[in-house]
Length: 135
Picture 1 (cartoon, rainbow, N blue to C red):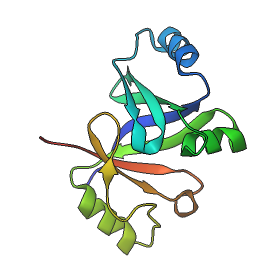
Picture 2: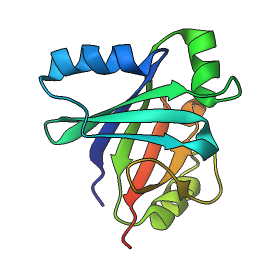
Picture 3: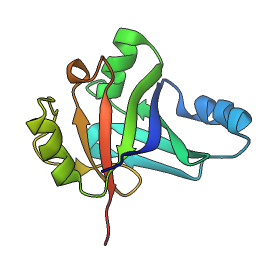
């Protein structure tokens, strides 16, 4: 089992301004923008070599992103790893003593099933496991 860096998630206050900033940094426009209503966020994705950068703006005060920005300010929110079998990886990590934030994977942005690993289990870093949905 090899995990592959899929994307870095960055919490932002103003998605339009942050899109313009990252267009300058990365030299290209985002390839996708999408709202994830269940998480109260709107996202933009940029290609960055083999991985991606995801910008996340809250659409409601109860959003995890809104709470994160209120507590810590804008910045790196999570590190995501692509997995081939999210259920197997969730079980493997649970068996190894990691605390997962959700018992079942849920639909995330960019056509992914996602599950998060609590930062207390991972040296203070929120980890996301993601698997491409094959339809």
